[in-house]
Length: 493
Image (cartoon, rainbow, N blue to C red):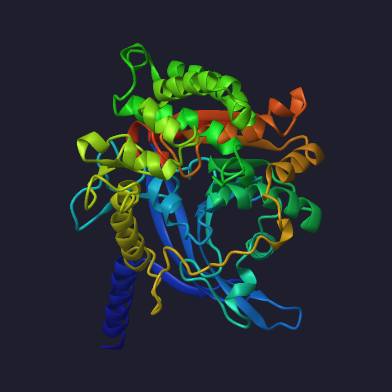
């Protein structure tokens, strides 16, 4: 009888393990984590891996817990961690959790979308991601304080809401992770999207200078490095010139350009637009009130040619058209507005007369699918449950830029400094043509104004995609993205 009960107990245990596939344990510091076993096929090869979901407790010198940072760690089984790369990955905002990269193009699962990136009808689902980076690197998805499940514990959350504060806390996370999971000997990479690129560039210098952690590669996805090239403020004309190619790209996609431009490939058209933007147009912006009426008229005519707008509107806007107006103006005659994150998407507003849009149709397209799937995935497959909600966007404002008071934050200089001190550091920069959150030409401008020496510039690889801010939601771009990232990791060995 006793033997029979033992057999039944073992059978029940095996059955439960097969159903849950989870081990609730503790990390080397005694913090509870959940580990699950999985497999995925990438490029025809089966990869067995372990997913670890849990918290990193960030402590004061006294041992008091100050914050709990939630992370998801994917490590390939049966491979020496000292030789295998590890990539620390995060999104932007500031205030965004890591779900976009996690469930969009990098992690082992991805949200089901149509090939052009359009959402399916609810309820939403996810599938194995054959384009995941797991064949090249282990992955750590980080949710900074106040995003995802991460929270401040022993002090106000506002102490983490700022450029310097964020760099310090995420940098400390990286250092602690390397110790607790024995990854100091691994090749190390940083991958960020949007403000996450600001964080990654800042971390590249911070980790070297503060913790003596040298990074092998920095992956910048839809980058914002110098806020002076991105912030549309009165008196700051530089972004107005750098945004022109994005206007051209959107107009080309929506077939609002002149036939001579519309008939050509987008890459060729954008090269022409770029040269006009940083040439005659930038000169006109600098001249301001010194321009004659004839000069102003000529510039307005060319501006209309490259943006798909009317010459009259360009003149009314004093040759400085706010991008928020552009979203409404480009397809006003069709009763449509275009997206900010991805100008390929369109929406309908309450009326067609207003200057500004009611919402961003490219964001609402992904908001529901990604929010639903990250919550479903964490609880159903990773077996991590938490009573508090997963903050897709945390309440992090006002975000502090006190370190650059009365000037624009420019982390391109931090990246240059890191590259100068670490001659093996390589950089990938990915740009979506239809991205207005971080327009592609602003990022390229920032790279070209780091004044890298030829041998340094050769370590920067810039790639372009016919998609938007999250260019990986567009399947052809996702396929190309994977190829480009594979090449980047291979070249960084």
